[in-house]
Amino acid sequence: MPFLNVRSKWRLYLDLIRWDRPAGWLLLLWPSLSALWIAADGFPGWHLVCVFVAGTVLMRSAGCCVNDVADRDFDKHVKRTANRPVTTGAVTPGEALKVGAVLALIAFALVLSTNPVAVVWSVVALGVAVIYPFAKRWFAMPQAVLGVAFSFGIPMAFAAVHAAGQAWQGWSFWWHSVPGLAWVLLVVNLCWVLAYDTEYAMVDRDDDVHLGIKTSAITLGAWDVAMIMCFYVIHLAGWTWALGVGRQPLWWLAMLVAAAQVVWHYRLIRHRDRLKCFQAFRLNHWLGFTVFLGVVWTRGA
Image (cartoon, rainbow, N blue to C red):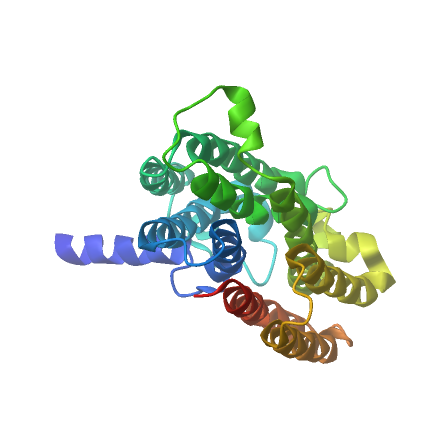
């Protein structure tokens, strides 16, 4: 009987971190890996790849724990989230925060294997991630805060590559180890987050209006679909400009595939059907993967 109780608790923890829904950590992963390839001008080595893959999964899982605790009083009134473990009381807020803390500490231990600059940036990234669950209470477009949180793997990737093997040289070194290109890519990626998370917010729009929660879907109103398309265009054009790919045919092939996906998303969300908007959100990781392939092709495997 104790064994069954432990097994049941582990299942609840897996539900808490959305283990059966990998789309969330894939959305985090592809921009981070793309940045690694760009920073290293090719394959960055298995050590950094493993650190960023594992760290992405762990931090997304930790973020789910914090988010569910912060939103537990809202989630019970939203159809899609009413059965989450913290919302139903199957996992207490204290338990969820402990699980999140353990996962975040493991991720931090992984970052410690890189360099001091990447470690400092990881602390900043954690701070932004903790702020996001509370942003919807005050900001008209909290998805922008999520965009920063979900894009912070980009400057971390540049720091992990550019400061590798170098001794700490003061706080100016911490800042200058991340080039301007990384911040451009962060903004470009933020536009992608605004696109897919507005699709996500469209699913819960009616519930969020009733609860008084602020989201980009509510703020944009009738312009939601048009702005999502604009965000996608800025995202793809931004990567193209930042990489300076010129006439490299494989990059343009990747952009053609990505553009086809954007058109598909438009067809899914144009009538604002809840289920189709959710489908569009869940499929976004394929667009990120397409951009990543384009980066690998242009930078070399």
